[in-house]
Structure formats: structure tokens, C-alpha cells
Image (cartoon, rainbow, N blue to C red; front, top):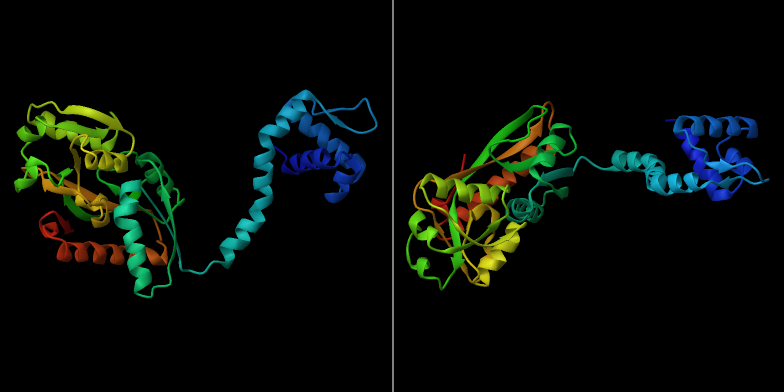
Length: 309
């Protein structure tokens, strides 16, 4: 598709004049007329009615313009985007992860680094697992944070395990099971549970651990957000599986978590595109490790629930 022809098309729509639109693109009227004809030939639709002195959009031309106007605006932004990227210092990092990890790991790490005087600017993106893995591989982001295993490795990526976190049960602090040091699968099977919908990662973990013990979970409520399950637990609608990494201390008001009995752990990792890494990636990961270690030291019970690899 000829981008100059598309720009000419937009110019004609904006000015109502082929001559004026051609002048803006430094084209002669005859060259502009040929360019429009070529565009219509490629599209196989008539964009303008030529039975009057001024070109008038056809119905198909108007619909086409409505569909591509945002795309054309984006094309005009490309030079500005490139200029912005050139002007950015080497202190910019883009991180992509799931929402719970963004709240539990990424944001606290950024805040820690800034408090320590690190000149860090960071874009934090929230995506699903497929987008995280595929876009990091294509260098859409500097670094991704996920739980293992990798599921959608279409393009090879570098995987760096960071930490392990024990699977826990989240409950209101007044719940009867809060009196124990851990929760057995049998006890969990007797409780109403709030969880993510079928096919989502935390739902899979719940069904996996319960299924291995020959038990079936009592699902009371489903949602599409881990953060919503936390609020459901807070409101007494049921218990849920979670781990300390995705739930910062600031979100624990009125809640407690107890480890699930047995060795049930989640491994978290950073993922990177093959080849050179952004200069700030290692600095960010060092800050993340320091954040986790501080939580291990400062929060009761955390040392037994989370450890760095």
C-alpha cells in the first residue's frame, strides 16, 4: 500500500481540494491525480465521485476514511515518536507482567530504587501471559516477569529464575483456620472458595493441588481478577489460594495467609529477549531482590514463605 497515496487521500478529505492536498505534499495536480487513481486501483473501490468540480467522497470512500483515520494519525506520529525515543536518556526501562506481580513486585521495586536515588524512569505494562512472552521475545519490552513454566515460547527467550514462593491460603483474620500454622488440603476442600475462572493460572493451580489429593474444590465465586478474589475473601465470601509475592503487606488489612500443607511452591522468573539487555535491567533485578529480602526480614513468617534463587 502506497503511504503517500494514503496521505494524499487524507489531505483531499481534509481540504476538499486535490490541488491544495497535492501542494502540501509537493506534488503536481496531475501526479496527485495519478496517485489517487493508483490507490483506488489497489483498494478496488472508488474513493471519490468525479462528476463535480470538487471531489466528493463516495459512500465507500467515507467508510474507508472512518476505518483508517486513526491509522493515518498514527503514521504522522512516527517522526515524533522517534524524536522522543532519541531524546530519552538511558534511564528508561519498560517492564511487562501480570497485574498482581505489578502491584506486589514491580511497583515496590521502582519505589525502592527511587528512594535510593536511582535515576530510573519506567513504563509498567500489564498483559496476559501470551502477550508477555511473545512481546518480550520481539523486544517490545525490556523485561518481563512471569511465573514458570513458560507457556508460549514461539520465539526463544532468556529465562532467569528469581525466587520461589510458597502456595498459601488467604482468609479473614477471624477465620477458624487462622489459628493453625498451615492448612491441609482436606480442610481446604471443606471451605467455600473464590477463585479465577477456568483456564486462568490460579484456577489451574487450585485444581491441580486438589486433584492430586483426589479432592474437588467447592467453588463459591469466580472472577477474572486476582485482586478481586482478595476483596471477596476480605468480605467473607470464601477463601482463596495465593502467595506472598503477589499480595503486598499493604493489601493484608483484615486478612491472614497460612501456607498450604505440603511442598507447594511457585517459581517466578524474569524473561528477556535474546541478545543484549537494557542497561537498567540488572539494576532493576537487583532492586527487586533487595525488596524481597527486606520483606523476608521485616514481615513475620515471610522468611519461610519466600526465598531468592
